[in-house]
Image 1 (cartoon, rainbow, N blue to C red):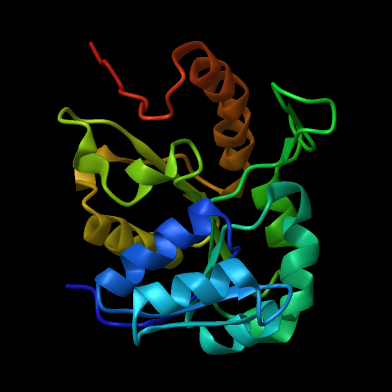
Image 2 (image 1 turned 45 degrees about the vertical axis):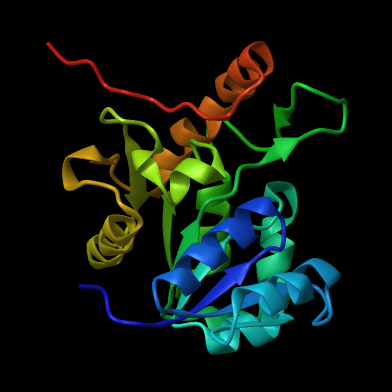
Length: 221
């Protein structure tokens, strides 16, 4: 059973608030971090989420969290976490669920980084003393924290350079309801190039079906 932790969730968007709410529900203490400590979305979330929920700046959240979840806007993630402070993030696992989606030319988006690099790799280079694990970025946030919304088996990917960090993230995913056989380790952090690129197809499927409530299944021979 996963012990109760102090967890920082960076980002006040729907993804960040959804993950933060699940973590509070599971008994963790959560600071929802944003650029300003009085972000209206964060304050409203904390008021509704209860005593284990609080808000702060990215720097406040980084100091508080034993574990850090990056749910900031992908094109701004590096700068957001820089403002949190490299020393405060040192030695900690950063679970990166964000994608480098560039909507500057409208929908569907482009990727601001791709092919021979990824957001996950950028974060690992920027914070070499942290342990970045890329996961949960290939699906709608409702499935991230409740995979059993889909009756059949489906897949969540992980990649990162530190084996122990990935093991810790696996335990967190299990607490969300993911089964061990549904977790596919893609190796080191360069695997983020592939999972982030999937969003180019994900957004097209979303547009074609008007729903994000789908995920990948692996049909094997």
